[in-house]
Image 1 (cartoon, rainbow, N blue to C red):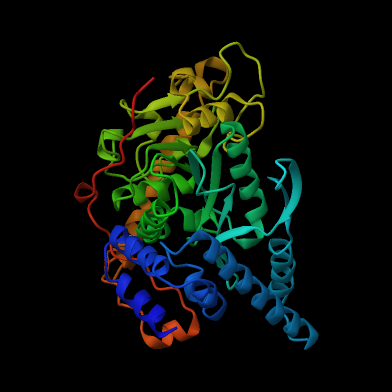
Image 2 (image 1 turned 30 degrees about the vertical axis):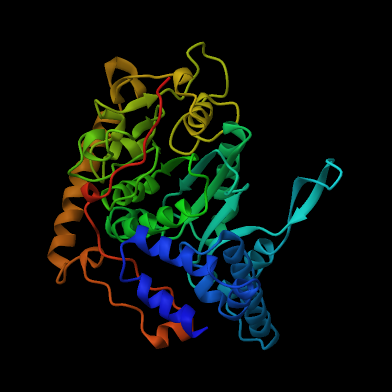
Length: 427
């Protein structure tokens, strides 16, 4: 156990890629059964350690959920539970409920099995965080990582996991999906106007993707998908050095105010794909920078079939509807079927046209821009210390390790120092 604590303190001083490799080497060198013993003895450390084997992290986080369930039940039995704790117990019970899957038995027959849910991260306290895997990471040819936006917490996880599963099914066999909610999602519009949650999430997203590389096939293609405020998080992750094969942004309020094109966000080997549906008021606001749908060097995918068939997608929350061109295009990106992506180039005015040649999209864009400037001015007046995302992060101390506190993320690092993953042949 002491060696594990030393490892955790040591790797938090390292760049994410080196940290993940060292963590993986530590567990690979353990004798049989020792990794399981560490996961059972210190689940709060193993469960969130990027680079530790996924199977051990699943086991550790299941134990964390069991412990949380016991604490919550004890509070209810004692009559001291809050309404939040009662709701959280229902959520934890749901997260502990096995799900149905398929497997192949010793005779080669396909059989239905019950499996525990697969969490690479779970934080049952407070707002709550979770990173859930759908599928087999170590065998997947294509991996989709979905980062959701504002208003999410442990109680809303089911809806976001459903979206991740829709992406996995649309991409087809050989795909695994990951729902990444390991950041403090803004819980309201006021909070979502701030970039601080995204700035703080960016380095953590880089650490996660670095750890993922130690678990997946060397030939696996990784697509990072950000929806709404999640696209702002993805943008901050890319600025902090996240490197994947492809990036998809849907309904984005902007990734960074200084970014005006794909070449400023991703290396040349990485393709950027964007979706903006007609009437998506969040994209029109450009609260966090220019709308990626307007980048001249990004591929803007259609959300409606050119023939007019399929499910209609309107507004901000329908990009992942089954039988929609929006979801089909996301699936094409994930599985690498880039030649069959459909595109569009409609403007805000055309997407929100009213009578007498008027449009509600442009006035909304202007009003939102003015509101964002006011918010930025107020935030600047209130800021008395540097952004936490750019501040030096102390190495976790012994007390934090004993309490199971997950250390804060590393400070931002420049993207240029870390070459991108190769995209491979284009079609």
